[in-house]
Length: 129
Image (cartoon, rainbow, N blue to C red; front, side, top):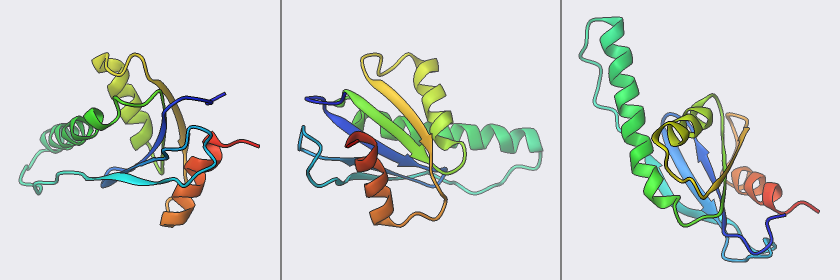
C-alpha cells in the first residue's frame, strides 16, 4: 500500500512535535526522528478568557507553520499523538489548503510513549505484515 512512497510520521502534542521517517522505501529499515519542534509559549499576560484563548490559538498556528515546510517532501504522513493536536493540525492543513498532494492519516497515541515506542508506532503503521 505504501510501496515506493516517501512516508513519515509526525508525533505531535501542544508542546512538541517529532518528525519520524526512514530512507528505506520498503519500510523495513530504521525509523528515526529527522526533525524536532518545540511549541512557542510567550507566557500568559492576558486577563480575559477570550483573549487567552485567542493567544493560545495564535501560538498553536505559529507552531503548525513551523512544522508544515518539513512535511512537503512526503507522499504519506501519519499524524499521531495524545489529545487533539493531530486533529487540530489536520484541520489546519485542510483549512489552509496546503499539502494537497500529500495523503494525511491520523491516529491517537498514549500520552506516555517512550521514544522507542513512538518510533515503533510509526514503523508499525507503514510496515504492516
